[in-house]
Amino acid sequence: MKNVAEIAESPEYRAVVEDCRATCLWSMGDVLHPRSERQLEQVLSAIERNGNLAAYRRAGEIRKWLSPDSRPRS
Image 1 (cartoon, rainbow, N blue to C red):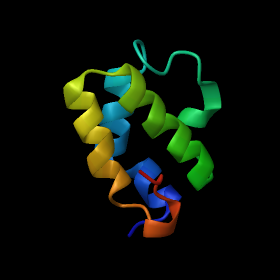
Image 2: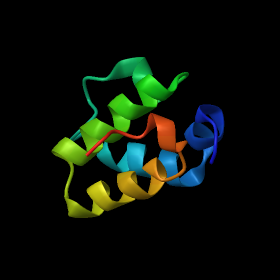
Image 3: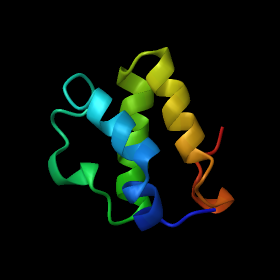
């Protein structure tokens, strides 16, 4: 488990955000630098909803770093 700050500073998070900025995240503004689990969830969900399969998988790997209580229910 990592906290939001650790995830937001990770090379993996930064890379997927940069790769998806123009196609999936262009309207999100400051949320791309999340300060809460809710904001992080918004970014990861947008990538999963609007990105390609590779981006979906990358977001899923990052999501695994969150605490089990903060992950979306299936």
